Image 1 (cartoon, helix red, strand yellow):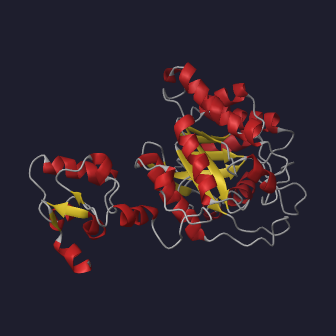
Image 2 (cartoon, helix red, strand yellow; image 1 turned 30 degrees about the vertical axis):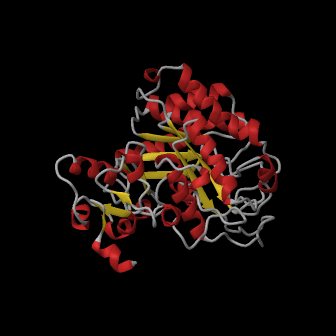
Image 3 (cartoon, one colour; image 1 turned 120 degrees about the vertical axis):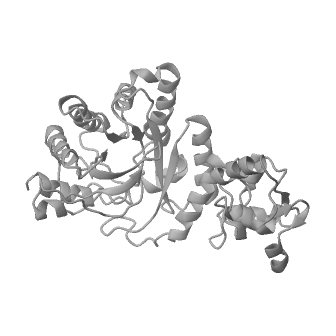
Length: 385
């Protein structure tokens, strides 16, 4: 295989890793032949600062010595594997970047020769990009299970984002999913180190003058865990290690793995977990506010914010002209920007009806049942009652 064939194979094997929307695109360029263009795989992604880019997601190697029950790269599974050397991949990506076929890179790897050795390979790749090719774009580096603290520090110096997949919410659940991984020492500890480094090392010592963001990923449904367990772990990470985002990947069975006959997780569960995680991170909700069922899962047929509002606001609607920001953002149809827009608008004139909310970009019909305008319910709400 030449380098582009290797990239095609490894990039397509990265579909299980999430960073942005997983939609496959290709960007043509005169620097590449039609065949080469087809093999330059990128995905739309949004950076921590909100900028949207075309992100190349790839493994450095799909060879792995770990035997996680759900993973397509588990040791002993029969499929075609490939490996890049650090300088080989760095040179190829520099070419893609110069041709504007990729605007950032998310680099992960199977574990071969131990977590420390594999992390060294990832770091070497990033160092070549930053130093030899003077690449100043976005790099997301995966932290390997078993990586050392100095390696985590070096990854933070080189990358805009670092991550390690917890996969499961706690030690008990991880044992069912990946029995030879150690939850606290191998997976959670690196996230703690990131936060320790942020607290002790000034941001200006990192490559772009900022600390990198951190994310993790859970396999939703892989270990028969509840939504409450996943969101309890997410909430702890938000508060204690300043996690930028938790990703949830709905489990789906892979052939020739111990879980090949395990039922796939409903994708709606993944969607509800994202909604609930944003409520915890950005909207001031607590775990106790979320509408868990008797088996500690979120209902699939209800938006968790809507379900909360139906319980607490339907009979006690909020006065739109007096509500504080923390109250406004709990109303369905009103997001963070919408709440700020309401506060700005009512500092000039009182809001009188739903049309004034629509002009601010609010989804007025969703908000209507939970609002009062100067002590009166909105006209559309009266029709719904």
